Length: 158
Image (cartoon, rainbow, N blue to C red):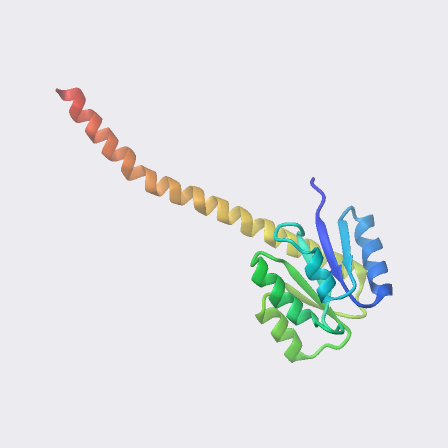
């Protein structure tokens, strides 16, 4: 199994340390960022399988970071964490592309489950796109093969 990479963004060094250590022990490749600008400087489309970000941070909040990252790569899988949950922020996060919304203090096993579920969902979507592409190629090629068969049948009759 290939190693999955996670970008963890939080202005709280304690949270960064706990999450970094936890996911490293689970064999994830972990990169941390202390704020939104730091995350943007480290982010590149396709580099990370998942982004876990705090909602409330100075200068750039997690919602703004989510919007900027998904503008760079719409396939970005994003989990929002917050110690200040409201229905409005949860709805905004999901509406703007967050896969899930996690409230602090969180249970690490629950977070692990949400991360695994998000990554599985991403793999399933990618597999569905590949399968869909193959099906379209087959559907398009069938008439071509039929026409070719008719033409070859006519040529062989001569």
